[in-house]
Image (cartoon, rainbow, N blue to C red):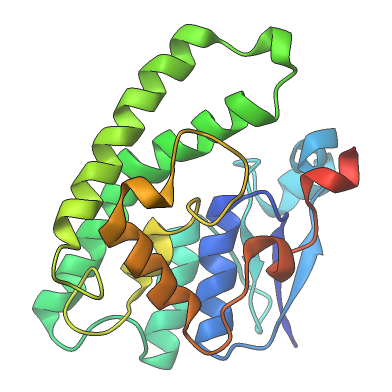
Length: 212
């Protein structure tokens, strides 16, 4: 059975899982979730994931897994790739994935959504301002950490890199400019140079132009 990832192209969280699976050499198929038309709230989808979120993985054995970090760990553990070389590396990988969930993607995702996917008259200016400040603080943390480093943990790519980059390749404006963060810019180029890398809109179905 081929693994199936329920996803859509605009989702940075789904991209984390898709990128990890692709770079780990997993045979998988995307299953498009029409998020913007309520696809994650249908009875059929909620039967798979009662949390009503993507990504959701149905693995080769028919087991359902949700939350991008869990899916990343599932295949990193199974393949023995992208977890670092030592127990200390693994702890550091987990630390950065938790940081991404709390400080990075949790700001970038809603900020990008509010600034691009809500009707202009419904975009909450104060929330955008507040999230923008928190996002800039996260970019500063990451850029500082990457000074003199190629990867977030140790000397090779890990799922920490694939988590923290989740929203940073998207073209929609949400205040992030690669030119303003040279260490992040260099790091993103390094991830994009890995064999098998694809832009999220090329890796998963669904993009804003489909709804235009």
